[in-house]
Image 1 (cartoon, helix red, strand yellow):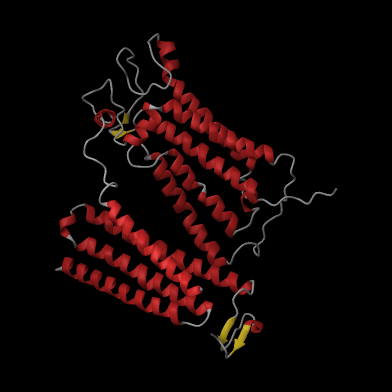
Image 2 (cartoon, chains in turn red, purple):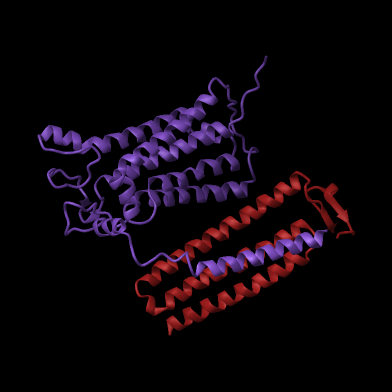
Length: 126
Length: 261
């Protein structure tokens, strides 16, 4: 019973990850400035990587045929998803901060920029 | 024009992929007929039934690198050592800045916190690659190169002067590197010296007892495999390579003081 629950929860998380990757891909193509596209890319790495990897770990835990290796695989999957969970936001944060500080990417179209209002280009956009 | 270029790129990618697919079925699979040399290596790398020929390491690559052709690897290590010495010689007499890193230098607190968490993790993975080199793929050089990622990340995230202020100076790295090389040298002649003291025949770079020379490095501790000299070579190579790369990165990434002519 508990094994089936683990497997189906894991499969659900993997399906969620596939959907999130699709959303992220659409977002990266459609969003109109660098920061929004970065946000869409990060959706792909948190919802689309952390959850499916953790889901694969749950599947491995509930998959009896793996024998003693199921805990190895599950442990590796959980550690990997934790690493992606802390590293990917730090990386995208560093990218966005560097782009904003060096004024390489203007905020366009912009509603409000609290850090530096002079970077805010209202309306427009391509 | 742009359309033509993108079409050409697309066609090249498709043709390249199909060429890869067509070739991969033919020539990239290793043949089942092994050469006799490979058979000898695979049969003797861990074989307790052939105590005069085995290396007692299940990882044949490390066994070849540090036992069957250990002298070659020793000279490779020396070449790397000399390359670092040459790099040092290029930058000799250059005054380097040494400022105290402040909280403002480097990237934001978020990145710094994540780096502080992941830095020890990278070191743990590096130690695992290096010190399990006689059991699983990896070894001293690979582990040392992985460990050298940590100083680079810390220099980028915190400050160029962060390592110096934490006591990781180029002099200390040079000392550690020399200690690693001396350790490799001592390991390679340890059984030879023991043979001289005990009056038994033994060779330089001897690991496990061979016919005619009964001396052998201890190859397991309470059932945990050490594979004789391989573990020690990996340990010292790990020290030498990680400190050597760290030394190179410190020299390359610390800004020079402005010279007044």
